[in-house]
Every structure is written in structure tokens, then in C-alpha cells.
Amino acid sequence: MKTFLAWSVGPWEIVIILVVVLLLFGGRKIPELMEGLGKGVKSFKKGMNEVEGELDKAKKELDKPAKKEEE
Image (cartoon, rainbow, N blue to C red; front, side):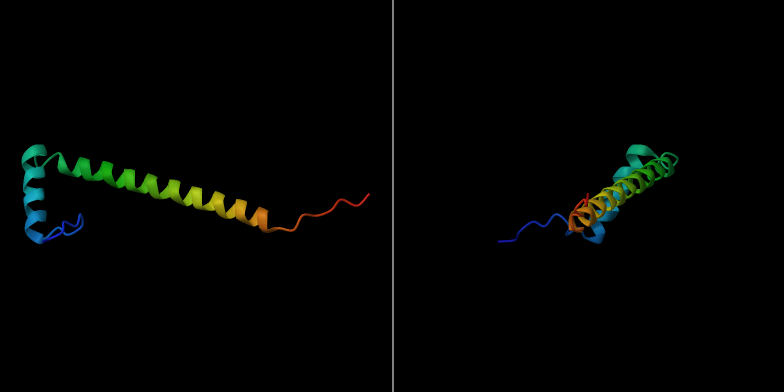
């Protein structure tokens, strides 16, 4: 029995997907779509880096020994 893997896309499948995208959107619209996709990926990475920074900051604060107030 052959199992389906979501990431096992071969070269012919990629060609078929590209042809379908070209037929649906046309040659002039594809650069605009790719630009939007690139901006979305960039924004996602920026958000992930911000979240990682906040988590690192919170971890450092928790790792610091509590300073006792001397009066």
C-alpha cells in the first residue's frame, strides 16, 4: 500500500500546478501575486522573530534570581 505524503510533489506535478496558475491568473497577474506572497512571508517571519524575542526576554527574566530588598 502506497502512503500519501503531503510534500512528495514531483516535477510533473509542479509543472501542472504552474500551468493551471498561469491559465487562471494570466502572465501579467503572476508577478503581483508573487509580490503579495513575498510580503506575506516577510511579515510572517517578522512576527515569528518578535514572538521569539519576547519569549527569550521572558525566559531571561524568569531565570534571574529574585533580588531581596534590603531595608
